[in-house]
Length: 100
Image (cartoon, rainbow, N blue to C red):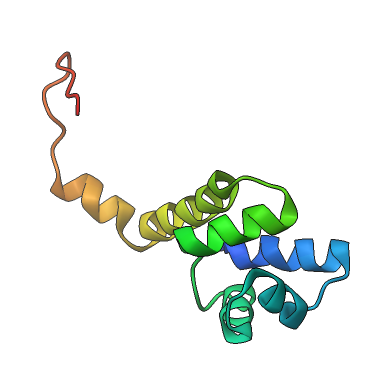
């Protein structure tokens, strides 16, 4: 089974497409180069602060980067314990909607 795609893989694609080094990106968005490297290597997630910086630099939205991170985390959680959670937790009675 293939694991969830880390947002760092998407960032690596942006770097390749625009022919930008990790170091240049880090300097341009005012973060330590190690942060960019760890994201690209899949060892660090994208925080809201980093998402804002990447969005400004690449002309995307911060939500784009946060959705990538959220999707990765949710898929990873499902892979780790989704079935166990389904066994352990009984859904609220159907027909009732919970809000808030």
